[in-house]
Amino acid sequence: MGELNKVKGALNQVIFGKEEVVDLLLVALLAQGHVLLESVPGTGKTKLAKSFAKVMKGKFSRVQFTPDVLPSDVTGIRYFNPKTQEFELRTGPVVTNVLLADEINRATPKTQSSLLEVMEEYQTTVDGETIKVPSPFIVIATQNPVESNYGTFPLPEAQLDRFLFKIDLGYPSIEEDKKILTTYRTSDPYDKLEASLTLEEIKSIQEEVKNVTISEVVLDYLLNLVHHSRNHHEVELGVSPRGMLSLMRAAQARAIIHERDFVTPEDIKVLVPYTFPHRMILTMDGAIKKTPEKIVSEILSEIEVPVELKVES
Image (cartoon, rainbow, N blue to C red):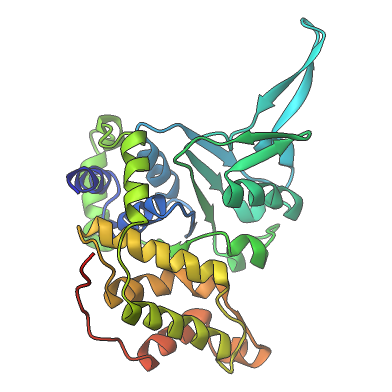
């Protein structure tokens, strides 16, 4: 997919050292999923989301969440226009292609829940009226590590489960920091970004994703991983059926990005660390000794990876 390679190349000129994150964002877009970025402030989360919208000629909206943001600030409101003497609908920032939900864990649970419908159903409801969001549509939410913040509201399990991936951006390396300083010293590469992919092309590729072949062997590998997460003695709640379906679709999307028409076990293995941990709730005992990421790593090492076989479509 030449167009996808152009997108990756363009984004890597703006956000340095995050090639894997760029790949995951493209996978999420093609799999029609959403992404939660967790990182300390100033690591390029907003720049990444804006750049992502720009390279695909998409509409970009941003909501800066604080405890006083209301659900209507997100979904929209019906207001009385004194000129026309009628109530009119003003749609909220969710009616867009790329929605940046900045510091989502600073919003109250009521406001957080206003995103549930649009993330799952690709529509929002304002005063009983249903409004479809444009396609393609992706939510890129950010949150700072909870333990370093005051006045935060951790996302509930129902909301976390709607995110295809949870990605920790982390700090750049010293080489990447030097490249950032050198590049941004004279100009902002974001200004030179050009659209590499149209919305229609994205929708077409999203349809292609559904036709990517998955063999029984690979499906069984995926199922073994999912059920191991549910039956692990240190896990209270494992990966949900929604998470299972999301992983399958993401694996199909990754195959497309790597110019294949079939899924390999490697596709599954690479995506599990971004798909499983935020969907798992550990037992009290497990939470004391381990993190979900550690348990996922154990599961991946315990389940034998099947031999990769190309599946003829």
